[in-house]
Amino acid sequence: MASPIQHALMFIVRVYRYAISPLLGPACRFTPSCSEYCMDALRKHGALRGSWLTLVRLLKCHPFHPGGYDPVR
Image 1 (spheres, rainbow, N blue to C red):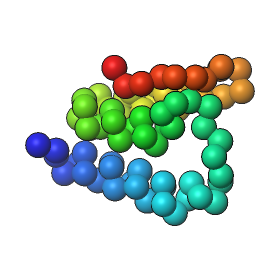
Image 2 (image 1 turned 90 degrees about the horizontal axis):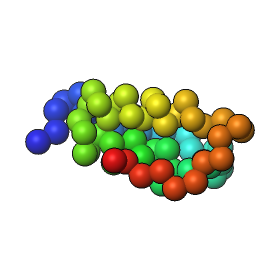
Image 3 (image 1 turned 45 degrees about the vertical axis):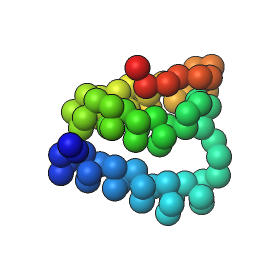
Image 4 (image 1 turned 180 degrees about the vertical axis):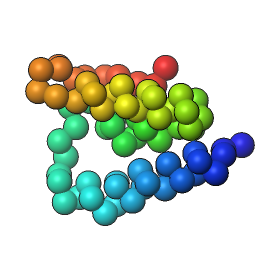
């Protein structure tokens, strides 16, 4: 069962996906996209570990990282 914090974090990601992301266009160098990765990480690992995994993933998002397939483990 998901915690209230987990639900709040997932809500923030949904707001980003539907309100902000369409304005920026597709730019993610990873598959799945960073927002999909975040949702999967939160579902699979909970709020604390899922947030940590998402932060690590976002820190890899720069021009010097090749990107590619990077699923939640």
